[in-house]
Image 1 (tube, rainbow, N blue to C red):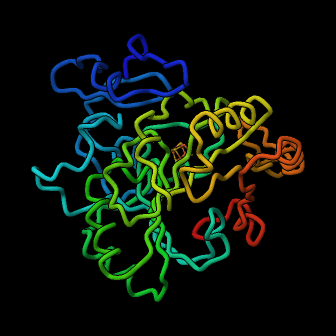
Image 2: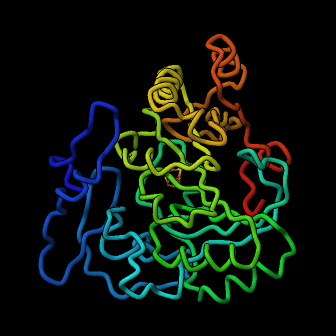
Length: 307
Ligand code: SF4
């Protein structure tokens, strides 16, 4: 996204209108634009993508054109959706977040994300993964006898074929959750799906990527999650809850502190927030939210993957 054309609304949202107006710079012939660090682009002429390579370049697993979640990336019923997805991992674990925390759940993590949250704990999903047929992923997930499936990422809504998988799982009788950044259009999701939509607070560095149109698309069985790293994030999140009446719109509003990493494993620029501090702020303000900790990080090593 051309930073000069990015317009932040007074509410901290980024509207579809702005997305439609925004244009990427035109790359030299034969080259395409790739994200490097937040707010920057570079050009590459590197050869075909090497799928399935865990050490492959980041761009190898990103959608082409450049990964900006625009309306053009929404599922369009008039054009055939691809039948394959870029999959990072499938695993069976305990759901660590949301109103379903504590339930058994199969996680389907898709590859690629167009955001770079300061506290992101799944950066490996930016790069790693394999191209898989939707039918094969479906078969693998259904083989695990578990009624709840969460499709996550990365950003799962960047891939059109996610909706094929979503619908197939729902039709097979599974409860489907999709966890999304809030920077992609959730209206494209099946109405039966339980969307858990992150709203990015200031310390994420991605606050201006929240899509205002997603607020109207929220349903009563959806949940909105705020990851809170400091007092500024808390105040911003509390204001958003009140301004949009989120507690009335959704099944739950989740407040989650940025996980305090162990010494030596800190994420640069994301110090973490002590849960007690967040708890005391919520109690003081009597907020209608559900505080949550990432349960899986207490059951297993916080950095362990596949749990
Ligand atoms: S949206 Fe999720 S996967 Fe993407 S950078 Fe943010 S935390 Fe990481």
